[in-house]
Amino acid sequence: MSDAPLQKGRAIATRDPGALRFALIALTLAFLGLFLVAPLAVVATEVFREGLGAYLAAIADPAARSAILLTLTIAAIAVPINAAFGMCAAWAIAKFKFPGKSALITLIDLPFSVSPVVSGLVFVLVFGAQGLLGPWLAARHIQIIFAIPGMALATMFVTSPFVARELIPVMQQLGNADEEAALSLGASGWTAFRTVTLPNIRWALLAGVLLCNARAMGEFGAVSVVSGHIRGLTNTIPLQVEILYNEYNIGAAFALASLLALLALVTLGLKSALEWRVRAALSEQRG
Amino acid sequence: MTFAATAGFLPFRRRSAIPGLRLTLAVTALYLLLIVVVPLAALLIRASSLGLMGIAGIAMQPRVAAALRVSFGVSLLAAFLSALVGAPIAWALARYRFPARRLFDAAIDLPFALPTAVAGIALSTVYAPNGWFGAPLAALGVKVAFTRLGILVAMIFVGFPFVVRTLQPVIAELETELEEASMTLGASRLATLRRVIAPPLIPAVLTGMALAFARGVGEYGSVIFIAGNLIGVTEIAPLLIVEKLEEFDYAGATAIAAIMLTISFVMLLAINRLQAYARTRLGDV
Image 1 (tube, rainbow over the protein chains, first blue to last red):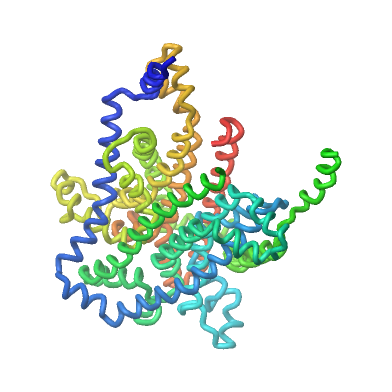
Image 2: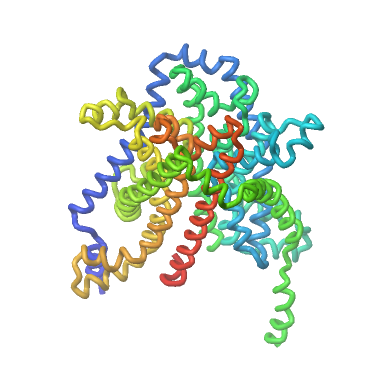
């Protein structure tokens, strides 16, 4: 009894006509190659057009340096907080059953479906001069909008789902058995989390943190609305790119933009590698 | 004996031995309340003070109506076209083997990862009248940058990955046995495609389109550089919110935002329904 004819039959049954295969592969290569890669390639060529000297000068410019510093500051605030939130949310959702769980998941995902501009606007309506807390804050000389706190809040809103989204499905698949074993051996809940859960979810957590960070550093619309565009004070890299581009300082705009493009490429590469590791770890867990 | 032991353990297991529900749930709920719920509620409170008639009045102002029409019209078209190119690409990536497939597969996520301001200035440069694609198209008499066509291009750029990424896993999970059965019953490959393969994929295509549409309506950074932002022609609703804020017209900004937020909620609900429908009718997909 040989499987060969059966295998051959299967291959034929699920095989599309050659012309269709060729057309779809050609469409995929052409569309992705032209439509998707051209914008990335244009960043690279615009950077090299003016030479390395101009590139370095554009990045060393004081306004550019303060934009880079502010972008790093905001990411340093938003990403750790959202990582902690993501771990809490994933623990509650993946390890327990409780009423309203699906509503909670929808609420976690909600910022993804809100326009970036609206995400910024809502904070202006809370903390702005005409906002709900505006008069109270003004009386105490607390500046939130057009300052770093507002920009950090808007970034936290926009990036809050990333870590939770990465962790929830992975922790659901892993189940509770490992933690229950640790607890039955006398570990405290915190010890079980630190020594059992955290090693199990480390690659998914890292992937979530990377995606969260890429969005936090690249966010434009939400941060633009709450920033007030004060050059050297409240401009992040994306906002500085906009200003330079609108001033027809194209070379400098693309020089700064190339930093963000590089971040996107590195994030994408690492994410692909990590997803592979997460899948490998999960199948190992399942035996 | 075993039965008694199991029965004895059941209530204990049901209560769950894992600690930390109260703490993690409290932190999660409190954070969402402060960062997501209260700010969105502030928008709804502000909008309700305008009243439905007030919002409708603002929405019918010519400039606002035009911006809403452009945003919704173009993003709807972009969602359709995203499905049109996204579905074949998802099929090719899931079913065929070709050189550099994994690289192309990873590249699908590029529009998700690339910051919108970068995508915006890059698209605008590529499609400008002197750009790589803009120049040959201009020679053919097609203007892309600074027209609605440019908005469409940007919205497809950020939208089509949603179609590919929702469809791809569903195609990978399709039971090839059904296709084999279809062939043994004498159906041609094209008939199988149409009558066996396509039906379970439709909810995923619609979900992808809904996500692409929602993203397109709210999209700001990728669009504003290529759009040209001509009032009444290529001004999108999110940009008009920014303009209204800069004029300190909070009522106008709030009204437009409330309309867009309502649409987002409706889309989110529709997507959840679609996925629930797909799960019950077609098994877990």
